[in-house]
Length: 272
Image (cartoon, rainbow, N blue to C red):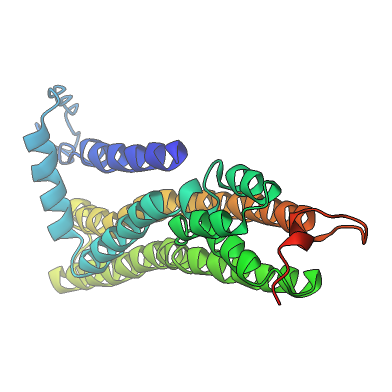
């Protein structure tokens, strides 16, 4: 999960750095009216200021037009799903640490009732549900118990993946919306030049194009960290799924896969 937190930090830094990189430059020809333009004076570096960054963000957001509203919505949606996964996709919600060992210890002591009570305490986790099902249906053949355990594990992990897919949607839509905003802005830019009736003032066109590119920049800023989080969450989900399958299979095989002369707890606790 620390990688996802790092991703959110990078995302925030990128949003903060973009306004500083997009400070308007001196207009062409400033400082001279003749045919030869005077050298452009370098803008003195300004100290870091949160207020200045917020002001620049507001200016760029307004310049980006209506498309920025949709990009902002996608960024909030993506951040919400990332935070939800940070809190929900944890080891304790899939295969709590020590649960398999405690359940196996009680089972080997011939106390299936205690195993069931322990599983009920962790019933919200996938492994807890599998253990609870296995204990309650311990008189059934092992192949049926294994099949049911696999179904439970598949449903639980599919539910976790269901909350990861919206991140892929955000990562795809954000740059497309940014590109759409840029195309619309370019159309408006050339219409502005056409209305002016001349191309003699290049600053008119360059200023409009600069505003049009804002949506693409912010679309990419939203998409890149969200795409990174999506793949990290997929890896995390698959890792937990493999861990769940390993622990559940080991418990079921140890409890129920016994020879005919075995007198262990799995044969002693057969219900009528």
